[in-house]
Image 1 (cartoon, rainbow, N blue to C red):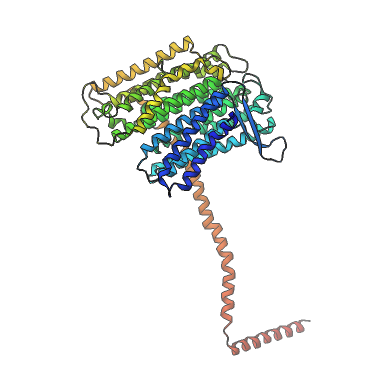
Image 2: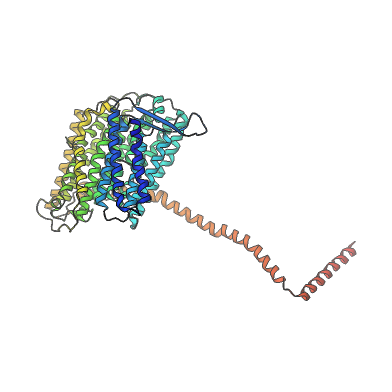
Length: 635
């Protein structure tokens, strides 16, 4: 099997699995689990095969025309572009999707809608793989939108609850809000570049550090950034992601680790020359990244629900990735995307076991339970690994990839390359260091509050629960390995990427590690003080002070949107309804009623009495005669 054929099969296998499950799931439920797991595992094996064959060498390309567009220069093509970035991200997607499918066989073993769930997860995986491998912007847009509709159904899996229904609708609408300018940006880019092929656009614009010859680079970059902000949950279109926790926990792991939110970062990495063509666009991207990092870290420190803490954590880590892209370093961005995919999938799946054991996702409730880590040892140890990676503590994977981002920001700030604003570097660097402190603080808070009881103050027993099966726990330990060790790949990844240096730099390594240690120590001190003062065990409120209430509410951004957009839209809708009923409907009813009235009068004249008709005829004749006499007399 050649590399191109194997690459074509990677997205086709989960797509075929989705179709087979949808067609046979109800009639043959016993085949659903094999159809969900085996094709995804096969796709993962083929993705590894493709990555090994590509081996960081020259990109492999293949294309066939799908449809004309009326312009011979702009055909839509089913095109593959297999470079080091694409093949490694595809491995991440398929491995995480396989882990999610295996985990789901235990997590949703008693769910009546498991067949539709498994089919949608397979379709979701296929759509993301299409985005990763394709070289055509229109085909990429197809995968982009299919992921959007899959997320709508998967987040709303528990549609019996109002929270799930609202969350799925919000996720769909917010991401679509970004997709409208995104589509316009794609069309404008293709029109100016003369092709839908991503490799063709990049080849025309040159390297990421060279100015491009687009007529409107800033406008195009900002239009595309709107779609990226929606998909990758960046300020101000990030509000859908915390609410998406209403879906099943494995769905959260898939969305946060390897699909959907990663798609936006990957898209910018593929088209980085377009963004690097505009210094203004890079500054905007840096500002968005900084606001996203800091705001989400503060919000995570104030959340009570475990999954919402992790959701805001994802938003912040995506901010690191976009920060790397803002200083034109796609290698650091994709490196962090890969390591984050491993430890964030681990954290969400471990959180699923923890929540099932505790019977709740509330940290406040967990803080009163004694012996939780003994009742869920697999979740405890694997979450420890994942949280250390999240906090970027060496030698865990998150340390190396986050240091690659901060090192790129430091280089851009102190020695910016041509076209890279120093302001972007300083913005990302300062925000990144502050976020490193906050990240360690909320990671330590989650770990301490959920699992630890230094003075035996916890009194509530852990409720009875069905223990997690081997399908769930084995996945946790499998993901713990890359969460721990994947960071050392910084030595070999440059051979797969653009050849840049991903090694940690001394200055940022020391500063960020010290910041992380300070954050952890401060969270620990606040937690111990809370125990000793017989107060609330959660150290979040005293650490944030008056900011806590605002951070817990996501800084009231949803309320601001409601005031700025939702309420005016509803008021306008009420006005339109009134005008429709009071004006338009009145006119329509009048126009319909007048012929009816005339018909009624005519019907009443048709009595069927001959004498009446003759009387009317004679009366009419007399009227006509009188009229004729009067006319004649007048002459």
